Image 1 (tube, rainbow, N blue to C red):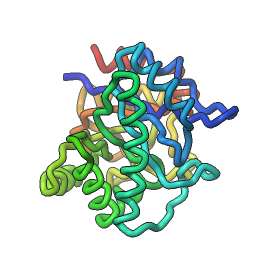
Image 2 (image 1 turned 120 degrees about the vertical axis):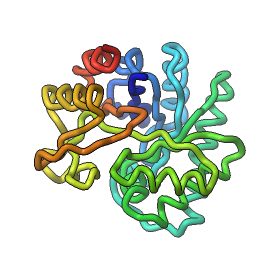
Image 3 (image 1 turned 90 degrees about the vertical axis):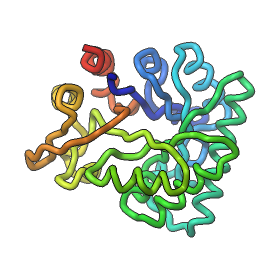
Image 4 (image 1 turned 180 degrees about the horizontal axis):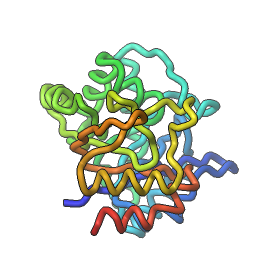
Amino acid sequence: MPLLLNCDLGESFGAWTMGMDEAVMPYIDQANIACGFHAGDYLVMQRTLKLAAEHNVMIGAHPGYLDLTGFGRRSISHPPEEIKALMHYQMSALDGMAKTQGLGMQYVKPHGALYNDMMADPVVRRAVMEAVATFYRPIKLMLLATTQADEHKAEAEEVGIELWLEAFADRCYDDDGALLSRGNNSAVHNKNKMLEQVAELSQQGTVTSVNGNKLKLNADTLCVHGDNIEGVQAISEIRQLLHT
């Protein structure tokens, strides 16, 4: 079965535009929609949901830390109960707006620093998993496919949730399977590198790390960023690679 293709969308705010949602939506399977904390607002959420419905794209919540200025890319320390509450707040907002349009939210993918903290810190990851587990109905959690995937699946099973393991088309990997920090000049691939990585993932189930090591990733879904012009330009080719 081909990898699903997902993208972080709905990240504009007021008069400020982020990403190229209309160009991306026809090619993807899953839309990770910002919920107002790191980006997005009620009108942007409404428009993004409508756009997803027009293209029959699966809907997921994309919650982050309350950090509009830093676009949710700055880590903010919260105790577990606050993490669960801030996630429920954002998930409920998107879920309610989706239901109003006759749509269903199916999963959640944390954004930015919350995503990175979830992968690096077991306490944060447990809080995120418990937030998903205690939502009023079953939904899936999307997290990074790494060499620790079996451990993460066991953690998810313990709290009673299912995972979608995610790989990245446009991000370079460190040798441990983590994403290379955006502070590194090699962190985001150009179009050619991106297509090479997608082809490798699709055909071999591996990625080549920054130092040339082959990493096995049992991913279910592949992310391309709508704020990365190279990614948007390559997305139709990425879709073709996944379905050949």
